[in-house]
Length: 200
Image 1 (cartoon, rainbow, N blue to C red):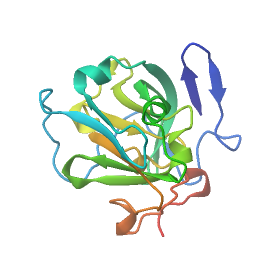
Image 2: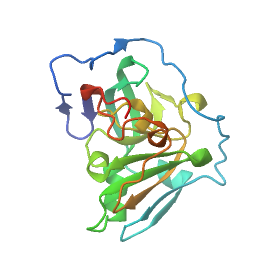
Image 3: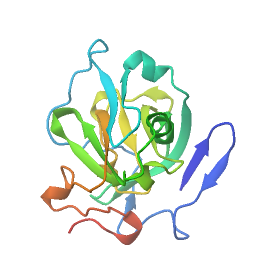
Image 4: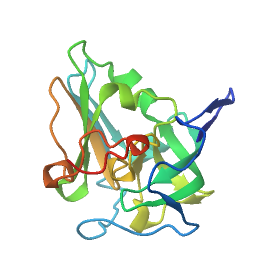
């Protein structure tokens, strides 16, 4: 279940009557899983780009990002390794806000999310337009911990959590889909937890 907190309060309910997708179990912990090392953050050199099939390419510094309109979203996490963590409170910038500013071209159908160390995650453009998707810099009232993606991570509640890339640096809009880091290693391209789309 996801809840959007902003000027208007609206509930977004996941498919099915149970909050747990097939094969998932609830944990109160937040396991740390990632490939590679935790990158160091430098405000002086950090930027976030929106590029590719857009009318207005964006390059946003950390201070500029912090000045963008902010939202809060409460949502559940579903990891492909079978754990789920309920009622996570995220704060950051809605992906819709960034896409609105960049103005996607008509032929744009997919988004390749770029993160540190060459990591990528691929999603349909329509998934980034969901109202509960955001680029988060805070979790449960505190700045994200480095191991959980500080300074910025994508949060896509309706997909398995590997699509919610850590340490993101930008998104590229494309006409064709390109499998991301985990997808080329055998993970399902769609990653819908309610359909148990874990692997190819």
